[in-house]
Amino acid sequence: MLNQKGYFDLLDWLESERDVKPQQFFQRMQSEFGIAHLLYIDVSLTPVSLKLHRLHHTFSPRVVQAVAALGSALLANVTRAALDVVRPLDWKALADRVPRGVELLQTANLPGLPYEGMIYPLVSRDGRAALLAIQVPAYGDCWLQYRRMHDRDIHALATLFHGHLLERETIKGRTDAPHLTQRELEALGWSAAGKSYWEISVILGISERTVRFFMANARSKLNAVSNAQAVAEAVWQGLISHH
Image (tube, rainbow, N blue to C red; front, side, top):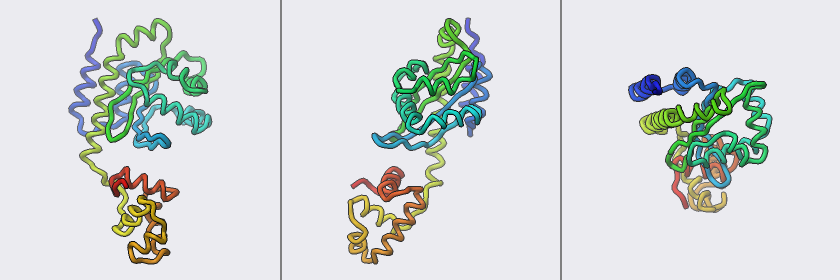
C-alpha cells in the first residue's frame, strides 16, 4: 500500500504555515516526490498579451539562458498552450501541439538523462490562469507507475499552494499598486474614451502640454511604453473603468 505520510506532512504544513515561500514548497516537493524541477506560473491572458504575475522555478541559470535564447515568440506560444490545459497533461503531448515545442522540451532537459514532465492546471480568478509543472527523472513503465502513484497528490498539493498565494494576495491587497494623482487618472480615463490630448485639455481646462505631462507620468508609474498600454494596465488594476 502506498505510504502517504509525506503527502499528509506537506498538507499539514501548507494548512498551518502563514507565509508559504515558493522555494520552501518546491524543496519539500522535490524531497517527497523525487522531482528534479518544478515551475509555477500565474498570468493574465488576453487575445494579444500575456501579463506575468508570478513565476517561480528551480531550473539552473544555464537552462534558463538556453530556453530564453529560443526566443520570446516560442516561449509565449508554449506558455499559452500550457495554460489552456484543463486536465493534467504530459509535457510531450503539449510539445507536439506547439511548433518547435519539442525543441523547447529538449532544451529544458539535462543532457544524457531521461526526463519526463507533467503540467497540472490550477483554477484561478480575475481572468488569470496558472499551472504547476514538474520534471522527473523517469521513463517508460517507471513513468507510468510514478504518475499512478503521485498524480493525484501532486495536483492536490499544487492547488493548495496556489490557493495560499492567492489568499495572501487578497489579504495584502494591492499595496504595491502605483499611486496616480487625480489628474493623471482623469487624463487616463479620457484617453481610454478615445480623446486626443487637445480634447482632454479642453475637457479638463488645462493646457495640452500639461495633459502630455500627466500622461507621461502615468506611463512611467504603470511601466507602460504607450498610452494604450497604460490605459490597459490602469483598467486591469481597477484604477479607471472600462469605456
